[in-house]
Image (cartoon, rainbow, N blue to C red; front, side, top):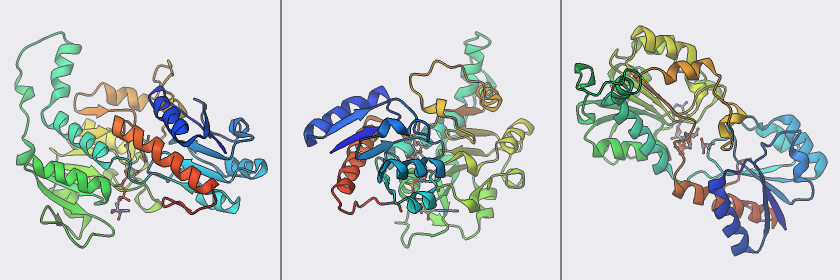
Length: 331
Ligand code: NAD
Ligand code: COI
């Protein structure tokens, strides 16, 4: 049995090598992005592991079929970028890692909320751009305990975020398309999303990207939000209309945004050895704004996450190649 791991970062390598040694399985790794052009590198391997936010296309799964590759193990949660129908049509089984560390993403969403609430971007701008190091009335922030936090999506990550925001004393309201039975007295569900939009000081998105929430945050929604509100998106870029968000921030419809996920993420975003300068005009504009914290889809990135992403995904691959049913089967 031998596996190939695509899109590897240097911080993943020790975990991959340890897993291979512990399980006595040959695991080759490459920094190559997985596409229909690069899939040839997987010839002769029994299974493929990958982590990327660019699409896994029909053409890719057609190529899998031609090469006789039947197993793809994703090292991440989201499957919105996978053509699942094409995978099924080509007889490719796919697993993900649904819970490698929900705390890591939740903690990052709270980090963004704190950065924006305490106006750290304004302090950085004064020092980094104006080379001034003194108080300013512009630095006066708000306590989280003074704010209502609206959580959209109360699954694994959303519930961890609720715990953390509650720990900081926030009033938490939440919306979920499929609400949980119990809220453990931690938060209240609103029936209508408009309540989240109009009542929240901070909105944090924790739902998967689906067809029905594409550009859910658009001009109409930004108009309903408080002009002091902050929007945190560590979920998926497609949920927020980037142009409308830019307008909302520039016109003062909302006060700030934490953007870990943005539309049109490129393969370069995940190339940890890349030396390319960012050219996306939206990313460049957001990066200059003191009321925005923009990060390269890195909310997941803790040592706990990386270890679990490798261990669980390679174990899923081994289970599939052994002909058994893995617990994290997606299709
Ligand atoms: P989960 O499946 O445990 O929870 C998702 C919740 O969203 C569920 O309760 C579901 O009912 C709800 N939901 C689905 N569609 C909805 C809709 N249209 N409106 C409201 N609620 C809806 O998933 P999770 O582990 O909490 O992850 C959530 C998302 O976070 C993932 O799908 C992924 O896109 C994203 N994510 C981002 C990072 C990162 O590094 N930025 C890392 C991991 C996951
Ligand atoms: C996920 O696990 O869904 C993420 O968004 C993490 C990313 C590295 C793909």
